[in-house]
Image (cartoon, rainbow, N blue to C red; front, top):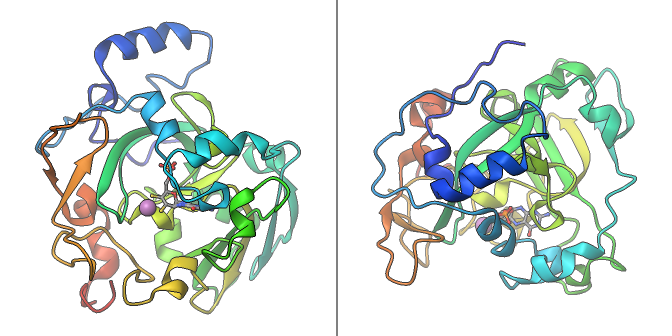
Length: 301
Ligand SMILES: Nc1nc2c(c(=O)[nH]1)N[C@H]1C(S)=C(S)[C@@H](COP(=O)(O)O)O[C@H]1N2
Ligand SMILES: [Mo]
């Protein structure tokens, strides 16, 4: 299958060279992940691209089902059973059903995507995901005419998820995309990082990654995908509509009511790390701006 997207980031943006070389050896047997379609495309100037290690990506997380602290997921997510795993695909599709994780992944081209990842809380990382384009899955299940949105739901299992016993959100965690956003080649279903299966704290076994939107849109540990003609319920939007819009495209010019979104703290930069400028659409403006032509980005935030 032809690659439709080439990352503007390279391994140099992800992690220190030593760790990269080290990991290359560790993963020598891990198959064709590394070097597949990904190398090439100069790094776009973006202040400092501070590196992110596997450890940073897996110990500084937001996954409220396991607690609201940044290190709660790393401590608690091991309790989540991810095998077997199945996803209900329903709504306006030709082939609705309950698909096992293995069925979903079979036939998909797993590729590597090194993306900027920008949390609405104004921290960011650069993460090497492995996954496939959501568009490929949607093509397989057959989107029916009239469908305009895709809704997603996360697992809720109180006995394995201490955080869902606390009503910080109206569980299950839910998110949604407009169909054209879901079909965009940058939008992936991620099944791993660094060529390894997705760690539980990052949303095992499968999660959404939408790199031009604030991190909370990238819903983890997905158990349901629904095609619909109505704007789906989205947990953060429902909890605080003034603070978290349905679109939530990264935009340095539209501040959160309680803080500026003009800059961000790149995790791993150390105690005295300088903040870097936040980029329009998180640096993916050329690829996605056309999706929002004619929309007032301050109104539809
Ligand atoms: N189910 C679920 N998905 C979620 C969250 C969550 O709490 N629960 N947090 C979101 C937020 S706020 C962010 S910033 C990212 C964090 O992803 P990471 O921990 O892999 O960096 O996941 C998003 N997806
Ligand atoms: Mo976030």
